Amino acid sequence: RKEVEQDPGPFNVPEGATVAFNCTYSNSASQSFFWYRQDCRKEPKLLMSVYSSGNEDGRFTAQLNRASQYISLLIRDSKLSDSATYLCVVNSFNAGNMLTFGGGTRLMVKP
Amino acid sequence: DTAVSQTPKYLVTQMGNDKSIKCEQNLGHDTMYWYKQDSKKFLKIMFSYNNKELIINETVPNRFSPKSPDKAHLNLHINSLELGDSAVYFCASSQDPMALGVLWAGELFFGEGSRLTVL
Figure 1: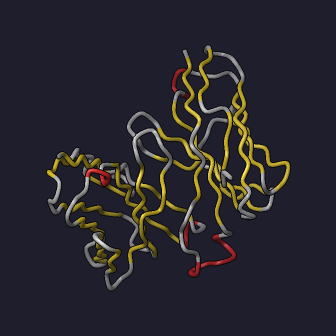
Figure 2 (figure 1 turned 30 degrees about the vertical axis):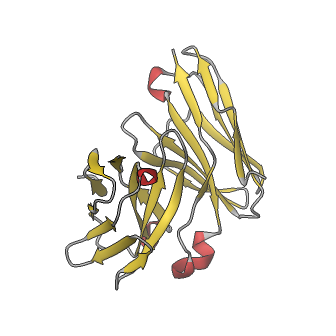
């Protein structure tokens, strides 16, 4: 089993749609969680951290469920510019504070 | 002014050759990394250096040898290239995660990647 698992997609949605991605992680000792965004043929960039209580940044909402070991990202009112791959990332302090990346979920927003 | 820069961006070479990729960061970070992203898009850490010292060395063939002349530079040298080495190699830097512990914000700053194709 991979440490961080995501549905690779692609998720094809029309502009304005709401779309949600989930991610599961296997290391129950993981302590911090992030979503990164990677545009086609570009480098990954931090999109947002994921806090235990859930957090929102504009149209983006991240949730964490520690009991079930999954993380979600909700994008409301999708824009064409949201088309990218979204990488779920988990940090384990007992692994030297090393980030483990999921394989990413590809989102394509169509006009 | 690019924060993390790596060269070359593209590298096409024959099996058996030796090649290097250079990386420099001007963010003043103590920690630098090399990641490999294969055709399935999985990003896997290869090496992590903190202040020129090797911290993480994942299961990587010893044909791969990182070198950090100073904390702003982390180069990757690959000997005897194989077809399976074809991938995009990303350099990254961050604040020191070990020193910051739970306070580390988890942000890695990546270079634009070096796409290596071995023929």
